[in-house]
Image (tube, rainbow, N blue to C red):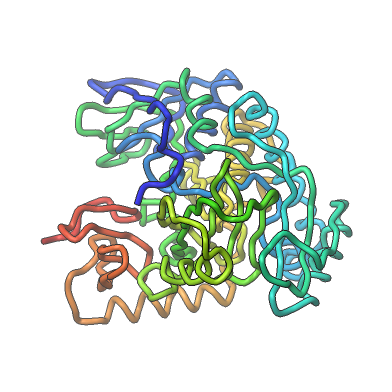
Length: 431
């Protein structure tokens, strides 16, 4: 179930921490976000160290489809209606700036390609028209389309040009090679600015938590503010080439992008711990539209979903002055990782970032999704079955397709033998 990104690439390796060290900034988590934060801080002249419990980019960053775009579903009409045009513009401007920064870094890296990006709808022309209007209103040149490269008809699609796609590991390794990184260095406990690991301590003035789902429960309330969502990918050979990038506006819709001679078909999504279409759904799509193609690889990924579809980037909570977080990327982790690095670098350097209020983790939680998250947590806490998740005690559900135990409350996942796969749990499942 490994993604295509591991094929024919030399793994970048770093040592395990041995002994005590001091640094100005500790970054916990060696995925795309943590690496880009370390890269930006280093370029700003800040002494920083990154600690990763496993290998860098061994988790969610290795499962991405690596679409580099500010077009995140139908986000702009949604933000405009909920928060107003100014906030929609700031979200767009931050993601556009992040896109340009990634393009400037990645332009010399193999498997980087400029392309168009489309969000399409199979059922509702109106939602597409409203998104085009919202984008044009904030200064983005968006186009309504009815014809696409897709093997089926659509009611309409939003097209934006000059977006990009890349090989995520080649990008991450290129910027990580000169950073202070410790692999196989799990943070066992965080006491203020002291991180305790298996083989030493890291003393830091400031700490960034970039662990996908934040693992510190006593601050920020992230266990209520987020849930996790699984989605699936199959890589097809001998399928019709798709030059640009496509995603359905529906949460359970399909995603398309090509990499060399492979078509990456994504979808089958569902809330972690519940039942969804999975790879079976994608294989039905393959048989219908690409019957002569051959499946080369298949894998799954997991995304943190926020209450209002905007990431949480900034201080971990109002009560934690020197503790920062970057999480909740809502399936758009590439540009949002760069936005995180831009905002957190400025905050740590004592500069006001014009985007920080948009992404503030302390913004209002009064959204419909909060009630849904609370209900799911209460329901599974009261379910009298075992095994239980060590994170907060929710009843785990068995995932037959992936042979794992999944938590429907907060998205922790465990192998059949109890070993942890995905956080926010930090310990293995009790046998």
